[in-house]
Length: 411
Image: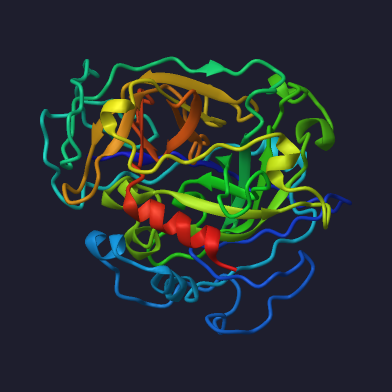
């Protein structure tokens, strides 16, 4: 499988000094963080000797089987090898968010391990536009978690969520910087079992937090829930920051990803690491001492780990696609039905895959499935075909469940 990561790359624009909501944001993956305000320098401490934007120290990458047996202390030791960089207060402005343009990505890489296949999938190339070698076909019903791969599903045309997003305020837009470029992703407010009804947790993709093997942590990571819910920024209209971001900008103060991402990932290309491309962030209210994110937006979504694949009969994904023909202003969704399997490594859980014509920028957006009469998050957008006919997200197995459990319990 050769596929492209779904982050929309956008050219950096000039920073505008303005008075804005305070946001404590960070670039990180799997880290233990001390509380720092947006204008404070990061104090020296364990695991921080290299300073801001440092690359994680070399470590032995655990196997998938080892990860499934990791305890709290194992996750904590991993976390202490990472650092964060507090964001500049008022870093993001609406002009920078809305006027940036996608940049050309690198060519995709071949799979690191030949997957077990039940049928030959269509080949994929870079987002620059090289066509696939086979048309998408109707997919069989997936029957196991054996690391296999099915034919690509038929493409589905996305639908824009009607304004206002009264029932979808848990979905939002993520902004961050990687090097000298700015990027966008999508994210979702998820329930925190350690703080019922008062969650400050956001689910997204690993590649929305970290640039992968040998790379650095992203900086100025910020979450804007229900971005453009009013439609004030639709169709290129000029509007205010307040109207475009009804709940303000929530800066990241802590985060966790799978160890596979910083240990082996090429963030420009899909591969075996994409099968663990999930990330969880903790954010802070821009008004110190204010309500939690969940209280502010009016809800959160529980996460369904190890969801039986035969119960995932009606999956929908949500996000803010930003590459043409989209402009990043609208929350869109694809009702994908039953997901099929995509795999680069048969020893890891096959990814969930649905037909969807959304484009880059919807990375990290939630995949929903119904359980007991309510929606649960079962994946996040990770990769997609160069022809924008399908998208895939990680299957959230024990590794994701243990990472989430650690993250909700850590101080």
